[in-house]
Length: 351
Image (cartoon, rainbow, N blue to C red; front, side):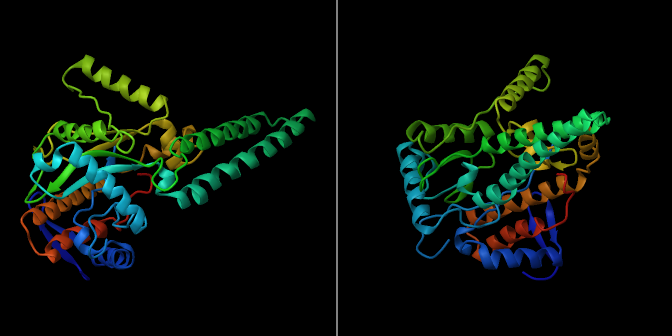
């Protein structure tokens, strides 16, 4: 795995992995990732606007297990039961199933990140800003003109509260698996085949069947079909997204109705993330909406991120197709490893 390497893919030809990227990926995979026979696929990044004897795995997009073994097996048992009750084992003709889904809430998978990064930033800002406002108000009371500065600090105080409210929407109490939900959006592979030839609606309907039999565990992935050649349909899509984000939703991923689509310049990237303002406040900090910050963010370059998304997508599909063809584990893991290696490539931090 070390050194400069090229992985042949059906979608993007030869994908090159740089030597320095491979070194970082090998460190992560060798120390933290699941047992290789369970790590069959890693999902690609998106550009904006396990062990022997295991019966499965629940893992992050960098190959790490979400839960301890006992909790993992409990979750898998519930998912297997739901798949059986929904009739998917028979309909898909397989005794194993690889799903792509979001696991909720954040606090179940990123407690340290929430506590030490987001919560710490919010607490510090909420503590400091009122003191500064009080001091500046006293200064203004003595006849010193600090109106501009006082206005900025008051705005930052409001932003700090908005920042805290934004990340708290994605946190709720969990006890073991009580309160944990999964939101499936794609059937990746089963015995002998992948399902990338099916339109996205097919995948979401399959997910809806799981919701129907296990709504306490499986959350519906909301969606809206938009005809981009129809103005009223586009307007309805804009309204849907605005209502979603105004109510505290993260945003949406825009996908073509078909799954794999070839355009004039090659395969079209699989999705574009379109996040709402308050979610972006979590990403970019409490003062995200300040005009100076927005001007800086608007100058970001998307080219490399889009290229990265396309290459990782091709590698992910390649790993699934190698699994379906029954190729040796090293061949499957070559493509999986390359996805993780590409994640080490430097990109614009504003993305």
